[in-house]
Amino acid sequence: MEPVIDQAFAAALYSEGDAGLDTGASLLAADPAADAELLRRGEEFVRRAWDRGWQPADLVRIVRRELDEHGAALAAGLIGSEVRRYARLPPRWQSQLDELPAPPPPGRPDRFSYASALLALYRVLLRLPSIEPVGPPPGAGPAALHLPPVHGEPRMLTRIRALLAKAEATGFPEEAEALTTKAQELMARHSIDEALLAARTHSSRTPGACRIGVDAPYETAKAILLDAVASANRCRAVWNSDLGFTTVVGFEADLEAVELLHTSLLVQGTAAMTRAEAGQRAGGRKRTKTFRQSFLMAYAQRLGSRLADGTARATAEAGADAAAAGPAGAADPGLLPVLAARDMAVTDTAEKMFPRTTTTRVRGATDLDGWTHGTQAADRARMGGAAPEIPG
Image (cartoon, rainbow, N blue to C red):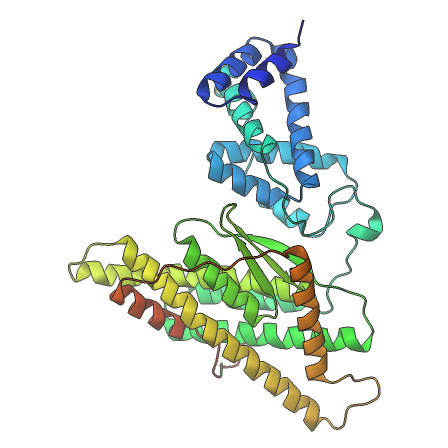
């Protein structure tokens, strides 16, 4: 006779609708002896997802999008048990694992509900498509998994994080502007220093990639903002609207900068939008979706030009500093050729990962007040201009 778990899977995973889930859950709820095999097969589904290019944060994000928070917590539990198999994990994985939601207790609130939720999760995992890998899977050899820390990374990133956290927390736009500007200056100069060091030491490092979630609502505006941040930090961004994430391609130090700055600017933009909306409501206007969409579109567009200006200014200052220091020595390849070579390497890597990208027409903003307030918020969060000395 066919094992109960195979009967349950046949009913729930390879059919559509809730009826199959109910049948499968009823079979599993009546047979506690199937519990261990049920979880083992769940770990196997997770393992197959690694082979298809997915990472822990990606899995939890897609499950939360397709199911709910409870499904995401169940996925986190499976991920946690599956990765215990590996002595070493790829770069970036540990930070993703640390941010996973806490898994719920097994069998809660009752055996039927628990089995039904697991089967719904397995249905999602079973149907995941293959996506572009952004790093080695767990279980790869030590050489593939090892990446030495970026030169100067711990102290620099700690300082940048502190500046951005203060910018997010302050209620004064001018202070947020100064703090964010200083953080961007540090990022840009750090990137240039890394590029020159790699060239002088003939580093064999190549561009990598990371994925950043782009969640509803207003995902188009958020994706545009992320693209602007990536471009300003010498990276390329490719948005997958169907799966709800953007893949950012670049050198490691620049990827770190993109993640930090994008998160901070999104927090600042959302806070500014909420304040602007409060003013609108005080004037008798109700909150509207078009106001928010237009606000974030304007915020993203204006920041794009501001970020590009800031990067150009930092590059020019670095070039002037190098010229003032005297003629380049035999070991100094020169700033502009180094940056051009890195830009070309990033572009080549992105084109190999995504040989068939397409462009999409973006729906324009339709709310003038939202656009005006978004532009003003971007000006307050601008990257350019001089910043006061911030204790480091």
